[in-house]
Image (tube, rainbow, N blue to C red; front, top):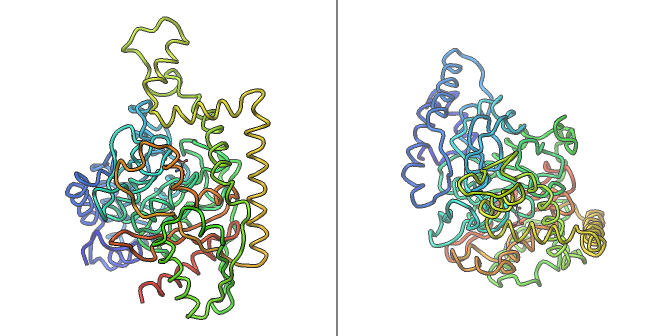
Length: 476
Ligand code: GLN
């Protein structure tokens, strides 16, 4: 096996046994990025020098005979909306083209403490708004499985980098599906963590009541390892909570799995439906109990999400005025302050970001607030209650992650609505604040199909347990 194909646990073993050095490993990844990224375009920046010097530090620790942690020397990639001190953080937006992060996001601080190595920052849809990475202000990332197709989004750069073995694992953010959907389209594992499980401090805010950071990895075990490090209460994010360390006592013979009927009616590609249903039959044959459940408000989830996410985005993005943050319009003459705002924002933001700011501002405006934003919040409660009710009967819920496999670059970019439909199976989870993981469970003509496992709040441990079992069934 080549170095860049290894998982976290495999690399750790080789480092500890001195079969490889961290420097050798990092160099192998930098070479790999050099070779692959011309075509894949997953990275917006690569930190060659700092990655090598971080690796040397780990090698010194090993040669001094010090015990190293599981993540020491592990080369990671980070979505470019998560702050790493002293490095550019653009959110793939022209408006933040030259923005240098003044501090580390909490998850980065925690990973640095473990000795993880950052190879660079990955591409995304501008401010994480999109499902294909085509909305990036800088470039379009290509799906490693088929270069004419999108990697999904918005964490498309992270998913593509993991799939193309340009890093061992990556961080992404998920507001409406942005970790799980690209994981599904590229064929990697992606975990959206419970709202509050991971600190959002240092994540560029899109929709603060739904945004979460999580890992994209080659397997379930690696996702668990990263989650265990980045989770937990942070005084800098008041919505974060301390997680008791939980060990799932779910038994595969007694676990109850729910499959919501509403997820097999709405515009799903029949081929994707077949792959998921065949997988469900397979686990039933292994003795797992599966029952049909209903999440009746599913049909309102996408509209509800669009209103809430756009409203919060319109408030969060107000700070990019060229004065406090970001590129200022200095090249062009501006007549007064308002003119300067208009020109800076007019030129700095892409079309999708502008569309959402306008929609969100409208939904929050006086006279419309009650009929749009407030109403969406009420629907959100109903969606959450659907899950609460379902979880009285079942332990985890299984659905497809995406209604279709990776689509062609350009195929959906012209119609915002057709792009939004990519998220119909992922947004409800964000609205309900639940954890969910996407894992590869088959292919259609070489294109990966993702299975979504939705768990109870703060029961990522149960998702990992079931997911590891599924991994065995799939690889069997
Ligand atoms: N694709 C969804 C959107 O455009 C979700 C994005 C995300 O999770 N960041 O809003």
